[in-house]
Length: 333
Ligand code: NAX
Image: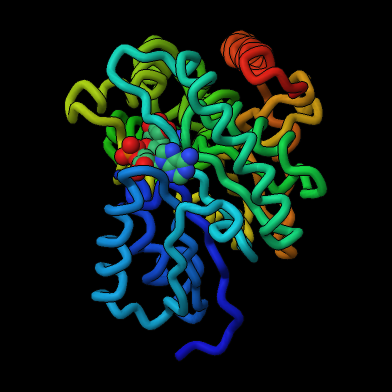
């Protein structure tokens, strides 16, 4: 039995597709390491609560050495109690043909209530990662609803896009995906995101000197990464689940442990104006996690005219999403 204080992780939508693919790996030690105990607070609604009973049985049946406690509940106060991390997955998923904007009204309300419940029940230095879509604006709603918590502890997931982009670059270059580094995802987790190949490296060299086909980079690569979610939905008949869970766990790990020298990871945080972006939107940036657990945005990356034009599009979408959500919810964002 490990002796460290457990990290308590609250997971909403725990019995859904992404939740189910995430929690067993959390309990196994795959995120926080083989000597770090974890406790899970699993939160569901409606029919999901019945399914959650079965998930709890399966967790018991795994007899994970690092798992110290499982709380399964439909009550947000109980669910977020003493949480160190909140992984907000539960939401109504996007269906084929549905735009993220359509989801703003439906899902925004969920994140007002959850932000408030987190502020009242979780630890004061709790960190919150939003996966449920539209995740950038949902994260902003949760942040604005959680009086007293630290703005810099709210994140929205763009890591799936980063991982997708790395794989596409690796395939084109004919190398293993681990050879591709530093792919920043700028902006929104949506079809306007900008997967930045201009600052990426392949086997330590600029990606643009390894892949010299500019048309492929600017059109095929950017377009394929932007539309990958929709392409998976068409093929599976359901949105990305295992890869989304994997990306959520990658994000937690990257925010928990220091980033290796010279590298970065992608995640959306509250803009304070870095790179000229409008303050007050949750914007995807390249981040480095420091040894003390705080983070910083990677500064000074060159952005050419093409990159700037793409970033402007995704910034505009996030400003519009914020306005749409504020109007739909009748709150200031
Ligand atoms: P599922 O429908 O399989 O699961 C969602 C679960 O959330 C259900 O069990 C439901 O009962 C529960 N739920 C709904 N409202 C809740 C609430 N208020 N409190 C607690 N639980 C609640 O969807 P799944 O495939 O797991 O997707 C979950 C979310 O992730 C969706 O919003 C989806 O769009 C989003 N995604 C985000 C991605 C990203 O990169 N940020 C990529 C994958 C995915 O599209």
